[in-house]
Amino acid sequence: MKLIVNGEALDATARTLQDLLTELDLTGPWLATAVDGDFVPAGERIDCTLRDGAAIEILSPMQGG
Image 1: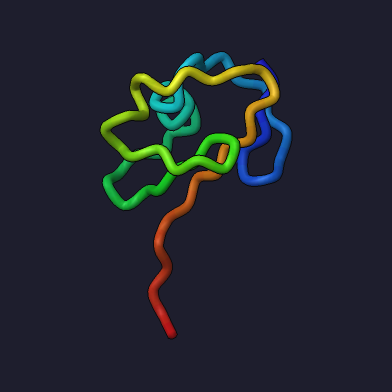
Image 2: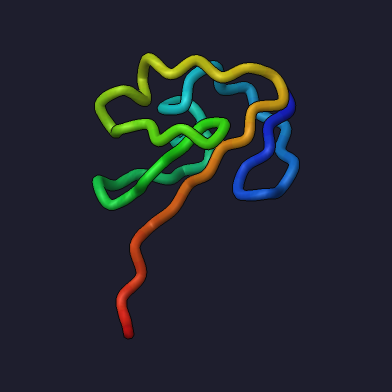
């Protein structure tokens, strides 16, 4: 499946957002995610089915000022 992750094209086998995070080796409670512009809470990632061409944003907080 072709996805857009943080603005970059990506071929992935993941079917859910949680599977994608695992496939990308991204874990941790500090991650924030969105699919097609809609925020997806951590508890809903396992049920968030991805479609071909979906735009995924994966963010982590930054420190500093």
